[in-house]
Image 1 (cartoon, rainbow, N blue to C red):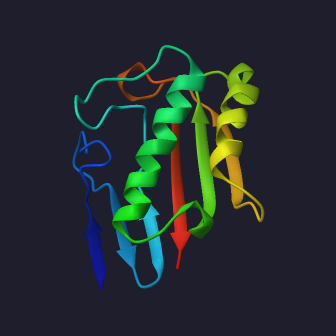
Image 2 (image 1 turned 90 degrees about the vertical axis):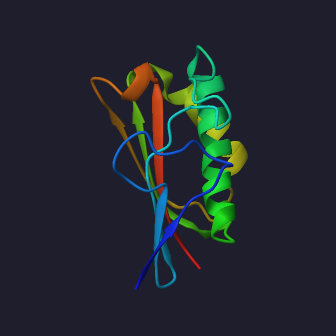
Length: 125
């Protein structure tokens, strides 16, 4: 049976989806963009600040299911410009430690609300 995960430590969904869904020992998290949970506004004008906010949002969602970044098994990173890969990766490395999860990074034409980065994770207990 699935459980819907919702927390005020991450932005509320901006559409018809859940912040995360837990099924058994798996947690499937919706992509996070750099929205401040309190204001609903984009945080930061560069990919470094935006990635930091995204990771803070992911922290909140994981915490709501009693998980941490060490539970993450798969990450998908969406960037509007792969030239920002190194800057995103520097922030990412502060949150993800060995053994690292599997990861894909994809350049996209655009992201919601003009964000430069979106990250989604899957975690396992």
